[in-house]
Image (spheres, rainbow, N blue to C red):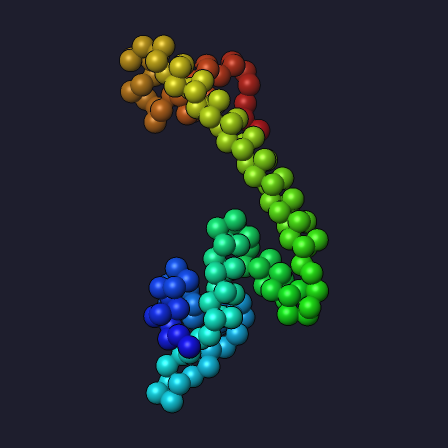
Amino acid sequence: MFRIGELSTLAGVSARTIRYYEKIGLLPPARRADNGYRLYDEADMERLRFIRRARALDFALDDIKEILAFRERGEPPCRYVMDVMSARIEEITARIRDLERLRDELTTLVEAGRRLPEDLQMNSCVCHLIETGGVEPRRGRTEE
C-alpha cells in the first residue's frame, strides 16, 4: 500500500492531482488508514499512470473517464479510443492549418513593415500594420 506522497512520486503526478482525480471519479476513493491517511494499491498506481499517459496524448478527462468505464464494464474500449484519437487528429490538423495561415499573415506583415518609411502615419496610429493589415485601406470602403 502507498500513501499519497509515495503514489505521487511513483506515478509522476502531484498529490493535489491525485485528490482531484478522486473527487471527479477518475480514481476510486482511497482507502483510509487508522490515522486517516489515504492508502492506494498497485491497481491505483497503474490507473494513475494510464491517466497520465492519456493526458500526455491530450485526451480530455471525460474521455479518459469513459475509457475507464469501458474497462470496468469488461468491454473493450478500443473502438471508442480510436474514434477519440481520429477526432483529435482532425482537430490538430485544423489547428495546424490555422497556425500556418497566421504564420503566413504575420510574415507578410513583417515584410511589409520592413518596407515602410518611419514617418508613414506612425505618429497618429497605434500600429499601422495591425490597423491596415500591412496594406493601405481602399478609399470609399467602410468596415461592416
